[in-house]
Amino acid sequence: MLKNASKQAKGILKEAIDKSVSDLKISEVSTIVSISAGTAEISGLATVQMNELLTFRGGAVGMVQTLE
Image (tube, rainbow, N blue to C red; front, side, top):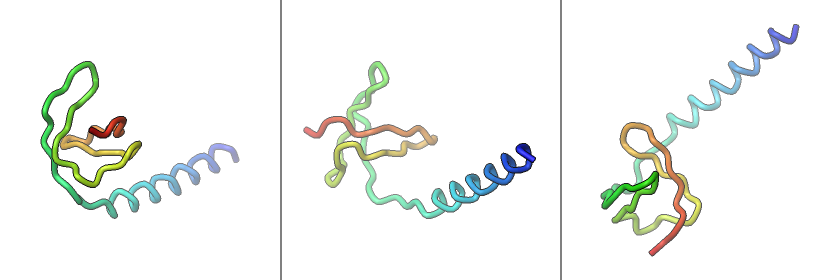
């Protein structure tokens, strides 16, 4: 019974994730200036906000920490 509930929950979550990913769209394109120790300096994101998630080519995800 628990195994069946687990499979059902997994299916519901997968469907929700697939739907939300398909709703994503590119809104701005930027240039990576440098990468060092897991931190990227990026130029060209005029409307980015603190703590916003960014998706990079290849699927990596990062969070905005400072605005300069």
